[in-house]
Image 1 (cartoon, one colour):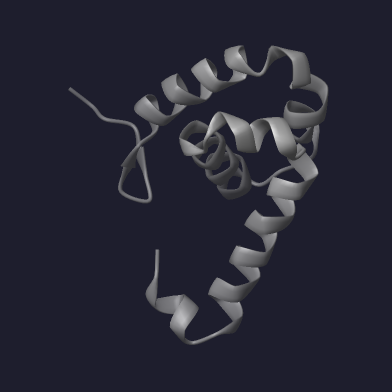
Image 2: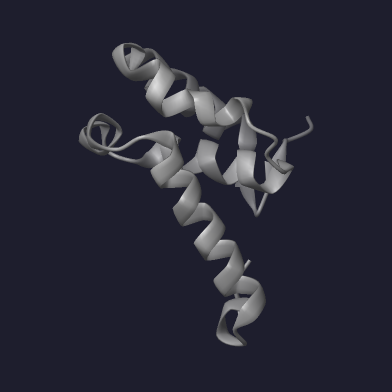
Length: 89
């Protein structure tokens, strides 16, 4: 049995949880999920899916996809720019 992993995480589980969250947030689909139509790197897509999959529903109700993508981008910048950030996956 092959497990689809990224960053040590089972991506099949994340995609399943992501699909459930997407279903729960149908009323905000455009503002939350349009960000996935942008030219995202594979890393950005996976990290956004992880973030959406595990965040509380009320956060999905309060913010839009661009807000979450900005946080992913800031995290990637910190990881590459600062010595401490390079020690984390």
